[in-house]
Image 1 (tube, rainbow, N blue to C red):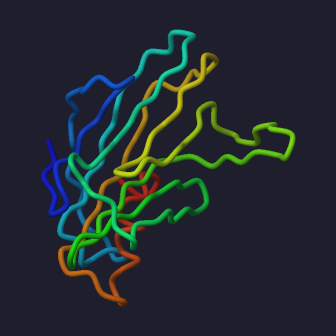
Image 2: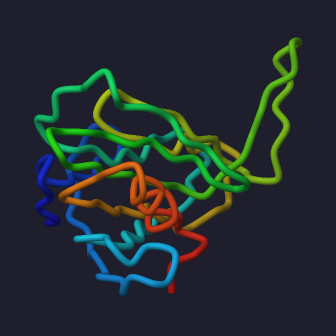
Length: 158
C-alpha cells in the first residue's frame, strides 16, 4: 500500500478492495521535486461484463483546490491538502458528441470521483492491464506545481 501525505492509496474493482503492486519510479528532469512517484498496474481478465476499476485516496476530504488536469492521452485529477499536492493519472482520451456517440481510440472510459479516478470497463473491452500513475510533492508552490502532472502520467513512466 502507498502511504501519502493525503492518505493511503487504495484500489477497488466493482467496489471490492484489491491488493496491488506499486512500482516506485525515479524522478526525471520534468519532475525533480517529487517526494513520491509510483506506477500501479492492475490486471483484468475481460469477461464481457461492465466493471469499474477505481483508485482513491482513502478518507480524503475534497478541497476547493482539487481539479481535473487532462492532457493528450492523459486523464488526471489533482488533490491538495495543506502544502501538499497529489495527482493520480490514467491513460485515456475520450469524448462524446451531442448525440451521445463516444469518440475514442480506447476500448474503455475514464471518470473522476471525489477522492480519486476510475477506469470504466465496457462489456466489449479487451484491455487487460490498467495503469495508474501517482505523484506528490510535500511542499507545492507555483514553480513546482506542474511536476505532479508530469510525474503521474502513466505514459511517461518507465
